[in-house]
Amino acid sequence: MREVLPGSAAPLVTAMGDEGDLVDLRLGRGCRCFAAFADDEVTAYGWLSSGPEWIGEIRLEIGPARGEAYVWNCLTLPAHRRRGLFTAVVTRMTTLVQAEGLQRLWIASGGGAEKALPGAGYRPVLQLGESPLGAAGLRLVRATAVAVASESWSPPPGARWRVPGGRSGRARCPDGQLGAGTEPMSTDGVLLTTVVGSYPQPDWLVDRALLGSRLPPRTRAPEIWRVPAEHLEEAQDDATLVAIRDLERAGIDIITDGEIRRESYSNRFAAALAGMDVDNPGVAIDRTGHPNPVPRVAGPIRRVNPVLLRDARFLRANTDRPIKVTIPGPFTMSQQAQDDHYGDEEALAFDLAVAVNEEVRDLFDVGVDVVQLDEPYLQARSEKARRFAIGAINRAVGGVTGTTALHTCFGYAHVVHSRPSGYPFLTELAEAAVDQISLESAQQGVDLAILDSVPGKRFIVGVIDLADESPVEDLETVERRIRAALRHVPPDRLLLAPDCGMKYLPRQKAFEKLQVMVAAAHRVRASL
Image (tube, rainbow, N blue to C red; front, side):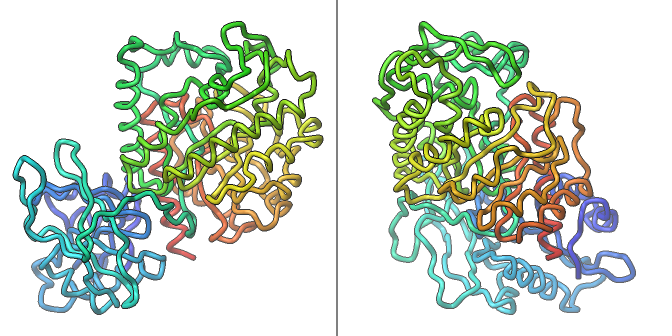
């Protein structure tokens, strides 16, 4: 019995008959299939998914959380039945994924898969039986059971289910209570996948041609939105849901909201701070060497109100996966402003750090699992960064209790075309009080030996090229990039992401690139 991988699925396509055309689609979005073979002929198979799956028989969408998967479509071919193959496939499949760290499995209740699971050390602990679902009177009959790997394990409250029409709820645990769902989820694991931050905004929401023709906005840029102001928030919510579902369908482990509501990664937060005059902007030289309108610092920097909390709550309410929210870092914001008040960039950066710290604390309080500081200007202004960036960054994350990340890069591939092969400001990040360091590397082929210079951190490494002309990678290319990183970082300290600037790609291309990244991660993980 072995796992069926993209590129070697022809026997499975034949075995699945009329459903054979689904094989490439399922594998492409991160589903996994395990099959028994006799002389290169599939005799039995079973599917496993860690992403949302629609169960047509009961009209229910199962959304596994982190550490969970859904076992489905297990079948023995007619000519090979009554030989124990079905049990062998299910047992072998679940044993393998148990070794990879999956703690819970959603399975079809009352079916052969449920009966086969004890052989892999799983036991049922949660049954969703016949029960009313909402005012429509829908009933869930023999829908799913949950099995776990450990006799001592007990289910956390709040396993998720969804019903048609967008309504959602939580499966009842044995005590009959509903989970609140605000505790941070685990972001530990082997070769977890994530995104840096952004995802393509739809053409009906923004003028993508206008967005792509200019430098990333530092002040407000209402002209990029196609939707009238009175309907904009609703439209942004709808587009954010599309991004969330795309990231889930692609199989991403730690997701963002795609930064759909933002004109750039930084201006939504920076422009909301007291002391920043965005109506009478100043000018700063962008990292491309061109002047760009920026907020003018006209008074003391203060965070008067939360800025990103509504975005975070919306994301938390609409996914069961671990979530990440990005926020511009204090050093980068100090370089993207015209200072007409402090006369001291370090003092400006430290007041920005205080504002960031207040926001980060609130983000963790509403259930965000990872908060990432975006600090691209550490590379563009490395000499200044050596003077005061680490102090400002550490002030920004001081006293917080959740997982923190710091992203640094060479600028969006769509905008910055001349890119160095290394990072001028990297070894210094060993002193940054963050848990994860996010680096892009795919486009310019960074020598990942540089990872050795920052021991002890977890790394988010870019393994997908986001240059405008870059094709959708093949699995072997991405697998090679992952293995290059593994030569310098152990798998439990390596996370995988695209390079930054995904918002500038066509949506379908971005989605397909993420699918390849997830499939490559599965392949490498299975080989460890």
